[in-house]
Length: 394
Length: 153
Image 1 (cartoon, chains in turn orange, yellow):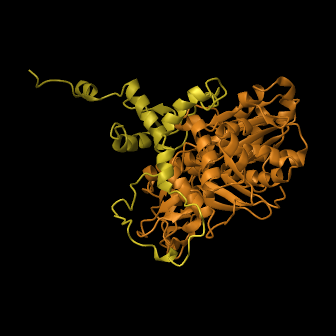
Image 2 (cartoon, helix red, strand yellow; image 1 turned 90 degrees about the vertical axis):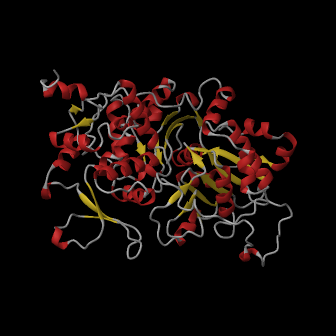
Image 3 (cartoon, rainbow over the protein chains, first blue to last red; image 1 turned 60 degrees about the horizontal axis):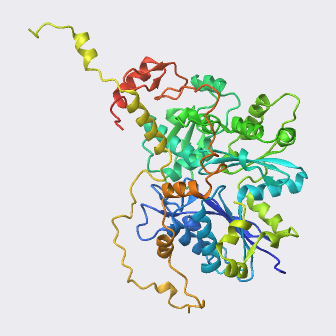
């Protein structure tokens, strides 16, 4: 029990955040990709950096609707991640922390336990929800009793209230909108309005990341977007990558036609803010669910009343979608207007929202009780999988 | 007998209006499309990979692990379950809420907002045949020419 570092794998549906607790984390695409241009080989995880032309990229993802379903894909990606090529590890002398989605299905949990003890021969294993790690990270710096964790990822957005360090399961809410829905919706409307980009998930995901923002006043921004000429501060052109001189596209101001440099561009106007708006109003695309601020309030109101004040004062956001400019402010404004006046509302967006849960893993490893959370190989061999269900509160 | 009739009446009869069921089906398909990982087919689908080709890159390394690791294919077979099966299974594993299904966000209390299916700006009108939203005569024209009843789901 004297290991100096542990291996942390925040196994997301789109990217895996991986690394040792005494160093930095790396973000690896958790998928296998095939390119049109290179027909000889698939690209596993971060091998994508070697791909010269990422147009028409085809994704093979281990996750479906946020759950690990395609084990062959996952095994291939894990083998890559644990290999010399990526982030080598010897599980014989290194404990492993791996994250799983909330309410993970029983047979997936069993499979996780089995594959890490039998295939990868882990000595100690901690399977945990990413939100638990994020909450641990938040509580470490704020010394608070109650937290609301908002995890807005690729497959969905979860709102999880914690009371005295324990998740209050009755009030957990899942919104079935995540980064994938946003990218697909952007792809759909761009293909209808301008240029067929249905095959370009990878590129359009970058368009989304580079161009979209969360509006502070949605209908006012709609009015601005309707204007013509210099009064419209929202409309921009996105220069698409051509993979000869340009590897990643960028957003630029509109130039008069005579100055145009014959690059292929997409004109983005109300798309820039109506895409992230789906996180706040899923019903805009016919998903009849609450948006994030309303769901935060609903979740807090489902908790015992004496904790309301404490929960409202400690809301933490993380996950890829929280990177949209204006995201935190919009959540704050909306929650503020929905909450009772005499409560303080506090919303924190950490500096690196993608690796926030991973960072939490670093600190949980230093917890004096860390090994009591884990399960060892001996325990697994003696008591088998039922013990894993007892020990890990997924 | 049939030579004299009103053009308007004939047009109105010919105009097909989608019923509620068809509209719901279209809406459901649109939401399902948002879940897809890829729109196109596997670009390597027509490639025939030969498994017997030796991998020269690995040949210099001696296998150091005592235990032979199982192939990805093994785990695919071992844990093969579809998403629908998993959800069904969950009903017995976690029969009482909270579980995956109960955690789903309820419908919003706020009224739905409507946007033009063509240009994305707020819309006030509904297309009579298919129920799509539009904002102006211009957009209605585009809609009728491109999507209305044509994109049959």
